[in-house]
Length: 326
Image (cartoon, rainbow, N blue to C red):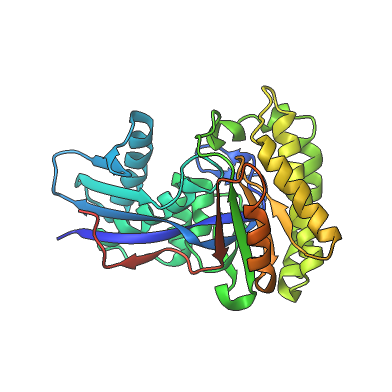
């Protein structure tokens, strides 16, 4: 039977992907660096030739029209590689909320790409899988390799891919994910990417980002937590400044998001070192070293408005598993 299941982690970007050089190919305007998250994942089962047309279920319910079209388009790319036209039945489940800034499309399209390609008998390299996953969702390319990951922006379909900079064991970093809302954002990342050129600060961001990438890679290699943390905070605020000055303006932060960010700065001044980052959503990611994770978790849970806190470490990328969702 042509059926496989894959699991892929969400990831948190330290240097962000915001803006596309090529919309059709999902080529980014700049490179990015991320960490795969141990507690957040998507599991996807794909079976071919069991139905007359593609049947797609997300978290137990039929996919909406736009989601289904996007997933079928990704399947078509994989079917083309395998030179087949079999319809597929798909069941995909996230173990975390969708559309709140935890990269659900990244884990989703990474798991889909690996499961579908293996179900059709394709044995693709991680580089090729990353390229394919990128076509479905840009940040999905970063959920294919292991641990700490760099997305090389490239100039074409064949040279824009993600690679592992360091294995998950390289550094005991934790991402304390602070959920402050479960509502899906009104403006998705795909639409947000299309607005970047309307911000007067976007060009300034691009001029700075190569240097920021270089400095972050150096800090990651040396495990220099202070420099690393200062860069990721600067980067997150920089991206949100572009978002808030786009036309129309994008306000992803909630009041509780800002309260958590203020707390992190205050605790750092008192000697408890951690740094914040955010993707396109209200969820705040607090990056700390393993030795401080339990104390920080206790203090974050006590902040008014915090709904849930999940402790993540670095983890391997997408992989095939034995479990089946149907």
